[in-house]
Amino acid sequence: MTAHAASARTTAATVGPVSRGPIGIVIEIAFGGALATIFAWGIGVMIAYGGMQTSWLWADKGIDHARGLVEENLRFIAEYPRSVLIQDTLAFEHKVIKAVSRPFIAMGALKYYEASLKPIPDSADSLGKTLALLKRELAKVFMVAMYIAMDTAMRLFVVLFALPSFLLACLLGIVDGLVRRDLRRWGGGRESSFVYHRAKKATAWSISGGFGIYLAWPFGGFNPAYMVLVFTVLVAASLSMYVSTFKKYL
Image (cartoon, rainbow, N blue to C red; front, side):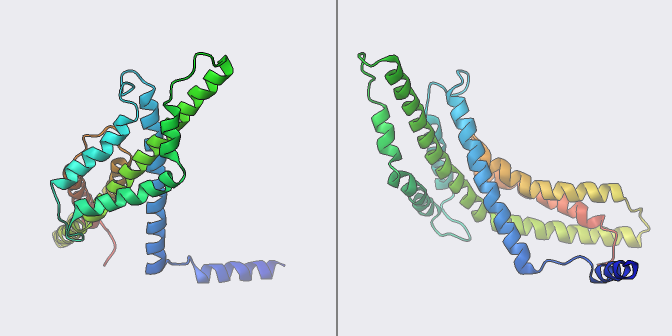
């Protein structure tokens, strides 16, 4: 019994942790991005609908606030009509909007919303009025969900449009970090595990955190050009610090 357990431990120690291949990493990144997009859409719907119920946010606008986010993003994208990946970004985003709205239209969300706007008869009893009001609020949720889905999909593709900039920032950060690392090693500089681990976390946050914040931002006024500029600088700076403090030999 003891010999068998010792043999099992020896085998496990020999095998070691299973490393992920490039395909596994790509699948993991794609799956994580899909989950982040769905999560951002859900958070955006909750914040947008909650803001409709709050007097100091956009209660007077109703679903027009969510619709305005889509229109605002289209105006921002129209300022930069071309990308390295897509020749006509504005036309592409219009196709994205149509594709996202198609399931909601097929489910009858627009007709349901239009029907909910009909005046409630004065002759209706309290139960009928309550059901009519609930129907109206549910219709608003459907419409907000549709517009936020459009907005989230548009922002997702804006991030993809900016992908060459992020890759260039990563390359710049890696090269700068390697140069600084060699200068530190040959110059007798001190190594700091504290800085290394903090830079590692900052690099992960600047990539994933910036992506999530931009997707879920519910208040509008977020120019994608500023987003690309700010987070590419953060990615380059944090990655440079991370690589420069890497203690192992490459």
